[in-house]
Amino acid sequence: MVYIMKININKNYLNLKESYLFSDINKKVKAYKELNPNADIIRLGIGDVTRPLPKVISDAMSKASLDMSEKDTFKGYPPEFGYDFLRERIKSYYERYNVSLNLNDIFVSDGAKSDIGNLLDIFGNNTILIPDPVYPVYVDTNIMKNNNVIFINGNKENKFLPLPDDSLENKPYIIYICSPNNPTGAAYNYKELALWVSFAKKTGSLIIYDAAYEAFIQSSDIPHSIYEIEGGKDVAIEVCSFSKFAGFTGIRCGYTVVPSNIEVDGVYLNKLWGRRQSTKFNGVSYITQAGAYACLSDEGILECKKNLSYYMENAKLLKDFFLEKGLWFTGGISSPYIWLECPNGMSSWEFFQFLLEKCNVVGTPGAGFGKNGEGFFRITSFGTHEATKEAIERMKKVL
Ligand code: MLT
Image (tube, rainbow, N blue to C red; front, top):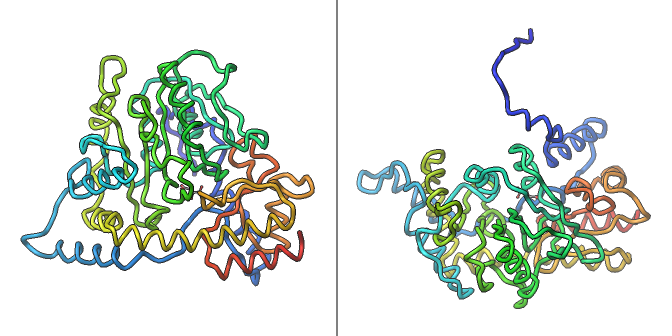
């Protein structure tokens, strides 16, 4: 029996698509699998890692878990913004790119996705500037808040790297930038990112910079952090994650940098975010932070990079195959994602269905990332070598 209540809900949620992109995909794959129980599905859709954790990380986590069973080393609530041992390591990691951070500007969290959504708690309603195509979380969280979202077009002409131009009003925005980009794999170089920083300065805007894929950068021309750009610390909050770098998609750890010098309405954003976090978040477990700490040791970085190289070998195989087929794509160089134009004028979902049925390969339809994603398709290189090679063999037969 349905029981009807009389309280109010946040009606903005009714403006969202019924389900999240990757839930939609899972439903379609599940339905296909029910009809074809013997289908051997290869999943190159959601960007989930497959390499096991480097031993240096799991050893550190094992040791931390033993600490929890000893009277002298047991830990209760973690410090609300992260253990200093991890914040120090994050700070040193940035020094590799000549970025100097204050410890108090680093907030350890359970991952980039939650921080990206939660950050909106500290802002009123603003006009939001979001590139299209885009990671759906940026859009959906703004719909939940009834913000006015303006899309800037990423397309084949600008190689999916839109830049600020005269069509944008001279007014303050919250701007979302993800580089290397999810879903397109395209990455801004220093000069291009500097254009965004100066646009933000000129308009009094804030950039929310998603650096979740920075560890994949292979070119010295591409910044790892927006703080490498002069003035970046005046205009940007940077969100990053251990998910893809260290294989923490299941463990959950990330961080957000809120520079202490940014002031809005007479309030420091850093203070506001600290207030938000200490009220609504109880920190990340000691065991997880010990793992993240090990990941940022010299050995940890080396081992994590070996896993990234493994994925990039997959990316190369996929890229070579798409090149051979004469398909247009971006990504796959400083990014685990390859963003290709669907063959034969197929729509994104048509190509999704085609690959699912003809090859039992799952990718992500570009249309799920926005209107400009229509006609494009995202394939990840996060699979195993075996699965990636097998997917290519199967695609060879039908493309
Ligand atoms: C993706 O496939 O876009 C990502 O795995 C999603 C995420 O990082 O939340």
